[in-house]
Amino acid sequence: MREKTKRWVLACGALATVSIVGAGVALVWPDSGATAPTRSAVKPPGSVASEFVSAIATGDAAGAAGLTDAAQAAAEAITRTRAGMAQSRFHARLGQVPPIADGANEVALDADVTWTLPGGAPLEYRTKVVLRLAGEQWKVRWTPAVLHPALGEGQSLAYTSTPGDGALLDRDGNPVPPGFAPVVMNSVTTAAGDLTGTPGWRVAAVDAAGTPVTVLQEQKAQVGRTVTVTLDPAKQRAAQAAVDQVGEQAVVVALQPSTGEVLAVAQNAAASGQGPIALTNYFEPGSTFKVVTAAAAISGGTANADTPVDCPGKATIGTRQITNEDQFALGTVPLHRAFAASCNTSFSKLAADLPADALPRAAAMFGLTADYRIAGITTNTGKVPPAESIPERVENGIGQGVVQTTPFGMALLAATVAKGSTPVPRLIREIETTGGATSALPGGVATALRSMMGEVVTSGTARQLARFGGVRGKTGTAQFGDGSGAHGWFVGYQGDLAFAVLVVDGGSSKAAVAVTANFLSGF
Image (cartoon, rainbow, N blue to C red; front, side):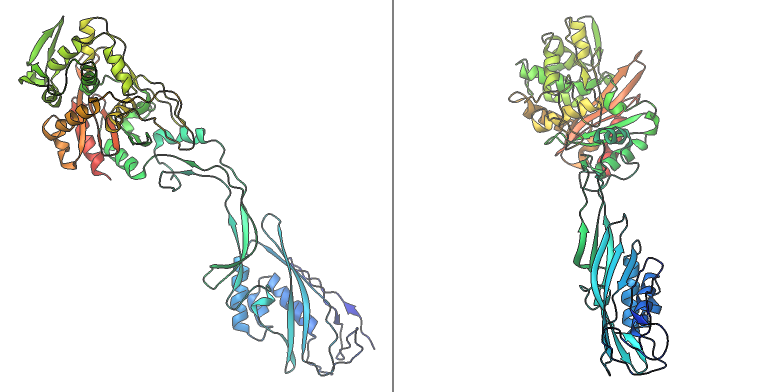
């Protein structure tokens, strides 16, 4: 007679519907009417299949494998699949056990499988569970295809998520790490805006090492914007390390002349709480401004690098008495020699003979009067007003008086000399800078300045930097306030790296030259 048909419902996320004989020793399959042999010890194949998928659903790899004819191989594959699909819920529905012919020892059940993936997306497919009668027991014939029809030997299933959010990357394409370039990164993050995207996912057949072999189903991520910050990690670290060795407020700003990209912005703890002084605060530039004075004289035809100039230890020019450091005197020397030695008396006289607007016009060639709108940072460059009187021009010509510049502006000056024209500064590659204007240095000016700035390092006031090779620049000691204190400056370039170094109230340019040496040693 026919026995009742039961439906087996598996908890823990797995549902199997299996047509089986209820209880008793006679196995009568409803669709065939054939009676299977009586074996009192035989557990029906549908029951074995149900236990198998139930064990998989509950994560009992050993239990599921024990119901197969290859327990070790099955346990390994099931364990890897459960680990690879750890965030997913398994659900299986077994079809009816088909009629088994008298004396047959194998039967196959369809299994409709659903993995509910993180986020609710389903992975659905049909596979087969084949059972064989081995002695007095039905066993699942093991093959990885039981888990998924696309699986081969040694393979398993694995779910992986793919991030959708955009990222802040450095110029090398690596994510910007926490604490990197604190002077600028907060404002860069604000300028970058929302980088949120929609994550994706993928289910793949993977080999024993976890390497994807076949992608079975995927939803591609909708990636948010990626923003590239032009900062150079090595140079930024070197700049930060260099200023951190100084007790006074100290800053380094570095640019790439060929592109205008900002490579480093660093200031030390002493400058904390003062805002981004490297980018926005104005300081007297001192003798570094002699680059502008020399450019004004050369472009205006007043002098060239070889023009003889007097360099007395002190001189009264107009109503101003000007002295050199320690009142050194060189006598009459070529302009390039007076520049390398930083002769105040020579350059004050040179400036006194210039037109009132000569220094502002020359400063503009270096971007020192430009108003740039750079995504990610706020910057100032310089204040160089016209000087109607000789005393004003005398003081402005050596970077004193009312002339003021920022470290950012002086890095731009050095980059202009290196490139031969004003580069457009940029910090976020995807967002163009507006404001300012590109200006080429007049014929002969760039060549003369490069040679003169090279002499500063080879035989002038920055000989300590000669060991680095190819460094060109200008030192500056800039008195401020009542004249009892002085800032220390060095501005210059090496290849495609231009930079400005300032030590606030450092006493002399020697402090800045020392920071520069540490910076150049750091990458």
